[in-house]
Amino acid sequence: MISMKPSDITFCIKTIHRPWSCHRLVESLCKHIAEPNIIVVDDGQPERRFLPAYPETAAKCQVIHPANVDVGVGVGRNIAVDAVSTEFMFLLDDDHVVTPNLNLDKLIDRFSKLDIDILGVRQGAGGRPTMLSPLMNGKRIWMHRGEIKRNGYVAWCHMSSNAFLARTETIRKLRWDEELKTFEHWEFFYRAKLAALKVAVAGDCFVKHAHVESADYRVLRQRSKFRSMGLRKHGFHSMRTPGGRVVHA
Amino acid sequence: MRDQVTFCIKTIHRPQCCAALVRSIHEHYGDDRPLIHVLDDGQPELRFSANCPTEAAMVDRLIETEYDIGLSAGRNRLLDAGDTPIVVFTDDDHLVTDQTRLPELVQKLNARHDLDLLAALSNHQERPKLMKADGKRLRIPHGHYRRQGSIRWCHYVGNCFVAYRDILQAIRWDESLKVEEHWDFFWRCKIAGVNVACDISHSFKHEHIDPPGYRRRRPEFQKAALRKHGIERVIWR
Image (cartoon, rainbow over all chains, first blue to last red; front, side, top):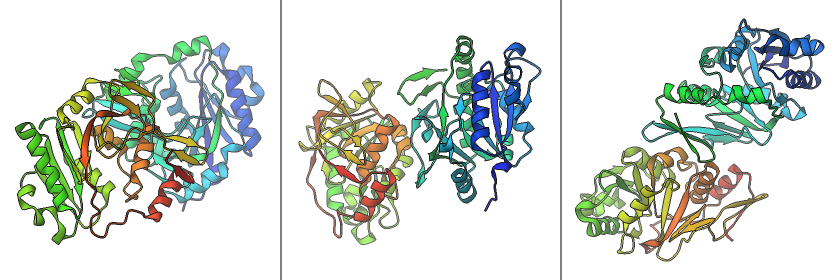
């Protein structure tokens, strides 16, 4: 059985141009977890970074500024994971907020006792257990709600939210595809499935998802070319989304 | 239909029923019949091949497994045993009749992008139903949420349907549930966003016969299915 304490976990956050949001997340971590280890990778333009905007909050973290601006979520997260020195890591998006509903003690207990490599938490109403099923002779990938098996509140599946606990070594091996600046989420979990990693969601553990959108953030995210790139990489010509829409590569 | 459709039959201890179903497929569709795959998990002396060798020779694949693997495991193995894009599932005590019009049912499934599973009626029963979570209760009342011609889009249908094999392989039947698997399967279809419908102008004939030793009520499986979804009761209205 694994022995894990909160101090064995590093919280990894990649942020860009949402300093207030990142500040809110870091403060929420510090409020609910005693002396958390936090790494923030900020690839924003110098004048729009988290550190100069919130120096007191930033002092509670290890803040890394990549050499280039807008390196993308894949590169940014890999930089964060490479900088982790604890055995375990917890990934967060910069618009998450931690509350007592994270139930970190329950997460640690389950991760320690159950056969799990990546243990995700619910993200408000989202982050439910999701499956990635190939259709049409492997030409279409279907992202749909579903689970492989369940033990109480823990459901094994193929994909969780972006708020998850894992061994640092597991994620260092898996990594994020650095060419995918966005639309990277399913691709990361699809490779986890190919690598036969055990992904699960703890249905009674939550982060708050307080999405912050700014005009330029929207431009940064809506990059259909990255969606196509991720799909084509695995030989898919299209994706069926949970809403039933089919998007083509 | 052979290159497009496989008729999948899971049977146990009802060899005469299975034989009648196989004959009905041949009688109605002749050379244009679908492939027929039968999975039999019965005791050796009660097997389809032992009791009805003529009809057993009329199927394209006969899979005989260890005893009583259950309906869910049997159907999952049938899904994985073939490669046509479309499958037909019925119970082994159903029969194809003039009202089944299987090629037309398949053509309707193929013609629309918003259908994944299209059921027919069983006699005049198994009409379309909806599924709604109501607190700790799961309600399954008659109804549909959309209609076009004789097609009713709904959440829950009977045991006779045509569907895309890959969609069913993504959902699969829960092998831990030997009975009570039906609503569990369709509830998971709903959650996953499978497009389920029933065409009320097509039907299979059903003459129910309980196999020897068959127990319809298995409270242990009912409890397991309820617990799995965090509900306390299923209300059929």
